[in-house]
Image (cartoon, rainbow, N blue to C red; front, side, top):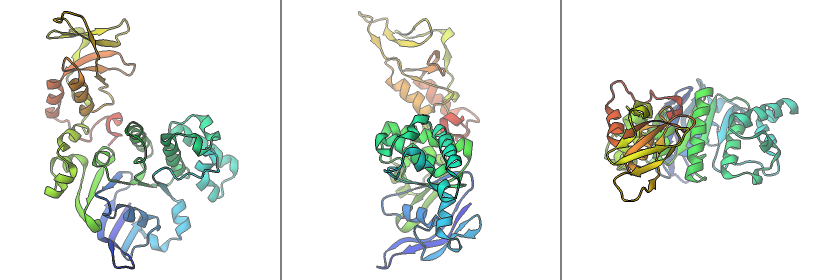
Length: 359
């Protein structure tokens, strides 16, 4: 566990970055710090590995004041991931990942073997290890950054806006990867972001900060979205916080109509090929049989937000439920998706690993 015990940081010019923060970061979970620029998120993160020294209070790591630990040794036992990966440009990817094992005195063969394992763990091909950072895409570089942070199997990961420098599609993929890894590794993760959507998607607990590192609200994502502490927190969450809440519930809660019960909704009919792959929707009442795209979702991995989005995009107002191979297994109207919000016992956080990373 990481504990901030009255931790504060006052700069020499008198500016207060953080004032007297008390916060527990539970072991094996993801805690996200979120808030406006300048609220002290990164300062707090860097207090943990002593890149910033608190001017008051303490930061405890498993009960030990980090101020009592030698900085270099402390940092080798903590994974650290930053924006744009921060890779060494003159080193091949395999050696970038093996940086901390080398510093810990591992022999070259053992360190490289560990790096090769981590390449696979973060979803990169083995040949990636032979390349240099400049030969990789931004998303690949960030995966390498995560692999490097995990190289010595540290119990704690510090992540400072690690996905903010990539495009939205790559960012979503990296978030999925982090949740998958966390479901397997159960690290203690302290994650900094300015993006509330990223915070509620990744966090087991979310800490909304005000200026000078003051806590405006500490809550699980569902409570944060449905019961903001005050008007300022509600404004920070945005008007669409109800829609974000759909992303915390599993699409498996939707009562989809089996394909065997028919593929027609009013004048619209879903057409499938011989392998049950969706071809599109046809309006049987139209003069011409024009084909319209069929939007789908996966009940086993997606959320209600994805299912509702698929239904909204569909010309028939109906989402297609798909299996892992993309075959249609059912259909769900917008009404069916919204009805899933009231399913008894469907508690936010009790979703499949694919939907929310096992929270």
